[in-house]
Amino acid sequence: MSMKDYEFWFVTGSQHLYGPEALDQVAANSKAIVDGLNASGKMPCRIVWKPIVKTAAEIKTMFKEASYNDSCAGVIAWMHTFSPSKMWINGLKDFKKPYCHFHTQFNREIPWDDIDMDFMNLNQAAHGDREHGFICTRLRMQRKIIVGYWQDEKPQNKLASWMRSAVGYAFSQNFKMVRFGDNMRQVAVTEGDKVEAEIKLGWDVEYRGIGDLVAIMNEVTDAEVDAMMAEYAEKYDMNTDNVDSVRYQAKTEVAMKKMFDEFGYSAFTTNFEDLHGMDQLPGLACQDLMAKGYGFGGEGDWKVAAMTAIMKAMAEGMTGGTAFMEDYTYHLEKGNEHILGAHMLEVCPSVAVNKPKIEVHELGIGDRQPPARLVFDSKNGDAIVASLVDMGGRLRLIVNDVKACNPLHKMPKLPVAGVMWKPMPDLETSAQAWIMAGGAHHSVLSYDVTAEMMHDWAAMMGIEFVHITADTTIEGIEKELFFNDVAYKIGI
Ligand code: MN
Image 1 (cartoon, rainbow, N blue to C red):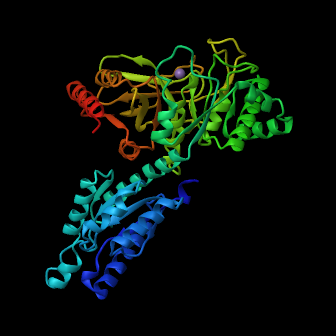
Image 2 (image 1 turned 30 degrees about the horizontal axis):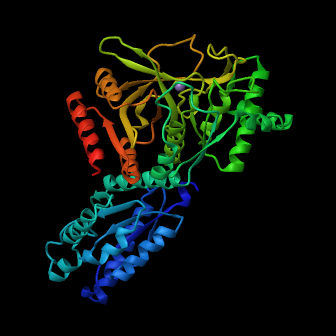
Image 3 (image 1 turned 180 degrees about the vertical axis):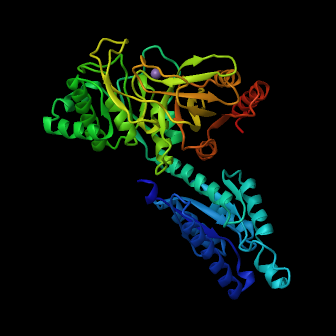
């Protein structure tokens, strides 16, 4: 399912005490809010108005239906009037989907000349929502709280951001991927507990021998390769005479796509140590598949492959770009420290600032033919890098805010795509904090997905979240990591 297929249910709590006339007004007002939010143009998915809930039975029924409806990616709740929260316990305690408590009010301003007790009794979100907040906290319920007037940009943007996180949650629950070959033989951070990942995150991480892919490649026709070549010619500049190498990548991509369609895979890994029966490491093939929304991880790194796919799903319809990334090398000029991110081949062209060029170069690692790949520079802009690591018994998501930029200088001899960035708060603190937190050398870089979206996604998933920001200090992060360890050990 894509972003537009999901919907969010907007439920307004009340009770019979107010009488039918007031309840009709509550219904009309909450409908107006839903219409206003949908008409704002900011919401990535449709918000669906649900009839006001006034009893424990109605509340329970609404949550049961939301739980079983595959299109419903989450519930947004608002208490226009007072809705006694004992009525909500049975419905809420079994509800597992993302939940947003939207603390707003129908009217922006107090109608100074006309305000009377009827008005006061109708417009009670200020205390009705506090009653609701108590029961959610008492139930230790994970939820997003958004405060603000419903016509204002800030709460609308927060709601849209949360909806994207919730779509990431739904995507994660139905996520399937394939590893072509295993992990690199000796690498630690790309390993992890796939059973735990399926329990916590919903991921089905499958394995297929590279021979299974080669068998499909051998059946790919010239016409299928021609069609893929035509697609490349439209999107990229051909900057090589080695057309055979490019055709080999086209054949690889066609075969991978066939397998992904057959088994429902949304992400994949390759491993240059395991290419039995292949002439080239997939380069251009991986890059073009990433541009189409597939997740990818190099060297068998299935966690980063999955995160790339999920973050791309969260960013659907946005135009900044999201890419599998690796911290490659540093520029340590005093006061102008930057990281150059790249990979052997596989950087997603969604982050390109210029039209990518198809080039063929020797790999320098491994023993295969020189692979075709896309070469380009990256955009300027605020971005994040994210890394999911397995701490043994729990998963930790680390996010660093960064300022990405065009390369500081031309790099004419560099045969791969690259992204430069300045990590927040500075390279010294960022790198120290990242290394203390155990962040991988692989990450997902995104100009679209924000740290707040990743925070909310991690909260929905019930995993640890560590955020390295412009305000991060080493002393602070050291304490945070220590207290997080304590919290997980004692099982808070
Ligand atoms: Mn790598």
